[in-house]
Length: 421
Image 1 (cartoon, rainbow, N blue to C red):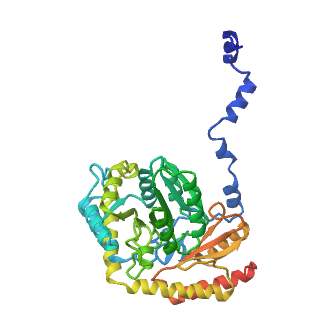
Image 2: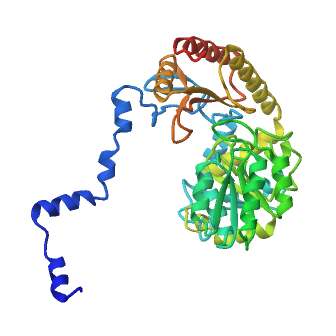
Image 3: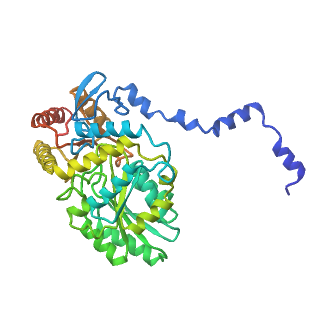
């Protein structure tokens, strides 16, 4: 029996030694001191992250006073350093100031935001568009506000972290299917239906997968969606400006624009700026605009960033030869790496992973690339599976033949040195 005497005894202060030990055991920051992996890599001289760039992020960048060839960005159309884009951003800052000082919901909507949404909807051949402050927030806000507790979300296991986190915020249930495996997609939905799905179903997938570089099997995905009356959302962060006859992304690539319910895109890749957007039916956009907390409670994209996107959108439509050159460069590098004997997986896009395997070999390979003046990105678990570390490379419309040949020559030399080829 618990008595008052027992409770009073439980409230008595612990002995100093015991009290100190318990405090340490429950210290919120204890895990921070226990995290040593990054410092160990730093001490070994192989730490590849948070490298400060002291120039524009074009095809050549300056790091610690050294000029390096950039093959680690998402500047697919090569417009981040375009004079027209920079001038548009500068003029907008001079006219509107450096920021909006508020959310879209209240005082943070400029006529520039409205103009961009209208032009994006027109470009993407959809009824309406909505612009968010970042691509990450776009997925968080859209997914979490559309899904109720009885709804089901079905996602590819290789989807971007922003999709995963958007699903975590949503009230509904989330299930995953094997990467780009439409038979498994059908299987997991069938199991969920058998167990009684009372609400709607939303299938979410990347269009181009950001690490693997492969393209979703959208035709078969839409067939499965039709079987179960599911809605389809495509994250086209790495597809807009790259895929499709006019750069509209995965849906245009497969001639399925009318079938995809929501297309999400970002401005930090082909659009050479910052932010994100969704396009779709007007009713859906209107709903998200009034319920997405990530939109309502975040400051809006600053005017310079919006003006840059507007300038890029105009260039994208007027200069299709940029996309043609991007694909010429992409095919050259895919063929070049495969001919050298590198495993580049199932990539079909300018994102070309170089499969390494061992984490430390990957870091050493990265360091050797860096010493040779090549800026690329090592990717290790948990971003990829155990034993699947890789060097992520990506290419632009403005990379020259000489630059690409230099990349292949450097990779050939290092691939042999580290036993990769």
